[in-house]
Structure formats: C-alpha cells, structure tokens
Length: 405
Image (cartoon, rainbow, N blue to C red; front, side):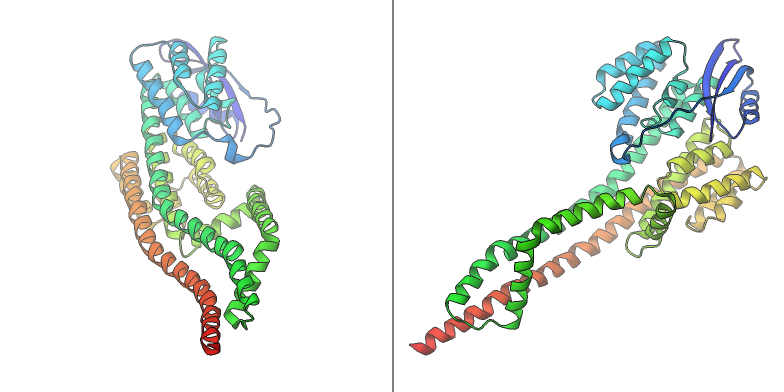
C-alpha cells in the first residue's frame, strides 16, 4: 500500500508535515478532515528500491522500542523540545542500529521533516504500527500521550514473549544436553569399548552391533550431519519468505497439536492489544486492521485480516468480521460486540488481551510441566539402551574369563 506525504494546518493554526499509509489520496484527505485539519498538499511518496535483508537481523526488539517510547514520553512531558529529547535518547541508547536511526531522525527533524515521516524512512526498525501512531499523535497534538501508550504496549508485548521464552528454556537446555551426552557416548566412549570387545574375542549381541553401526555413522558423517542441519535451518528461513509457502507454514503452526493452541492465544493477545492501542489514539478501525495485518507475525492470519479489512470497508461491524476468523477464539468476537454496544471497544479489547496473556502463561506452564518428565523418560530410555548395549558384552567377557579358570 502506498504512503502519502501531507502538509497541513492543524487546529491551532500551525503548519505540520507527516506521512500516512492509505489506498488512495481520498483516504488521506478524509483522515485529515476527520482530525479537524486543513490540507495544504498531499502527494504520494516515491518508493525507492529496498535491499533484501534477513528478518532475523533487521528488527529491533520490543523491549528496546518500549525504552525509546518511554524516554521520549518523559522528555516531551517535561517540556523538552523534540530535537533535544531525541538527542538525549540517542546518547543513552545501547542498540547501535536504533541509535544510528535516531541520529538520522534528528537530522530529518532539523530539516523540517515530521517525526513519523522520518520513522517511515527506517521501516526496517520502526514497525508500521508505531509510525502510524506517532503520525496520529502529531496530528492531534498528543505525541507524549501516544508515546506513553506505545511504551506500555511494547512492554506488555515484551513481557508476553519473555514468558514463552522463559518457560521453554529448560526443555530446550535439557534436549541439547541430552543430545550432546548421547553423541559423546556414541563417538568417544563406544569405540573404546568396541575395541576392547574385539580384542577379547567376544561375540557381540544384536543391540551392541546396532549401536556400533550408529557410532560408526556419527563418527564418519558428523560434519555432514551438522552441515545438513545448518542447510535445513537456513533453507527453512529462506522458503518462509516465499508468500505461498509462508502461508502454509503458519497455517500448519496454528493447527499443530503441541503448540498450536499456544500460538493461537499469542496471536489473539497481540491482535486485541494492537487494535486497542491504535483505536485509543484515534486511528480509524480500518487503518488499525491494516496495520495489525502487517505486524501480527503470521502470514496466514495476515491474509485473514486483510480480508476482514475489506469487509469493514463494506460496512460490516468489527465483531462480525473478527467472528469469521476461525483461528481467533470466539471470545474476541463476543467481547468486541459488547464493546461496540457500550462504546468502549478499545477498553474491552485491552482487557481481553490481558486475559489471553494469562492464558498463554498458563498454557505454557502446563505444556512444559508435561514435556519435562516426558523428555527425561525418553532420554533415560536412550541412555539405558546404550549402557545395556555396553554391559551385555562385558558380562559375556566376564563369563568367559570365569569359565576358563
């Protein structure tokens, strides 16, 4: 969707500039009128070619965005000029990528460019939601309040992701340690015992011969195995950038038996909180739906939200279009309907997001509570199999020695 650069006269009579993402120029004009401003000039922004980047290196973490927004709110609330505020924030910023972007923002602002427009030039760092929210804050004169709202939004987003990561840390560590131990036993320990058995002339049982085959395979092809794993990881990351493949991958993720339920709740929380934050800032629900589609983090749900946006533009209610998205829990549609009838949609959606945050935390705890003992049992069986395969020939050797005495 194209971006439009606008120059307006706001309610106080001051001239302002900014950018806005819309389907056409008429939507930009309507947005300006809705905010009680007078348009001087509206033109489509020229889109330069963008270099291909790996997403794993291009994004700034939610925690860093929350710190940026919190500091900017504090400075503006204290009455500091925008350029001075940005300069102080830049001096305290640890993330070099974000620090350089802030430096570019300072240069742009000094040339008369609006903050939101400058952020639009760094869309690989600043999410579309934040850019649109900042633009709304500039137009309404509530930039400090918008920054506070976005700080809270990203703090909650970071908290949710940390809960999931923390809960998954122990099972991942246990898996890595277990695989490392088994690999060590097969590649370093097992060959020594096999050599001892061969010198002793012991006939090896089937279990031991099978383990020897696995040991020989690992020792001979360990580098090839590591290379294949690396290729699979990077290959997966590459094909995930393909639109059709990404949609199938994310659809399967949402329906997977182990993590599908948790992923659906994470998407529900992110969707409701983002919509609530944008509506609170005065962004039309249609524009909010489009922005959420770009930042939801799931290509399959993104397509569903784009369809929902089109339905909203045709006159359907928010609760109706959300209810048609099967991957969303029915509670979102029900709560949205209550919010529409009471005129407090954003407040109810915000509380719904908090509810799903708790649901995610509880679901992750239950999953890890089941996974941990299961993984321990599986690894105990594998290691027990290795020990048994080593001990059987040793018993045969002991019997042969005793029989010869």
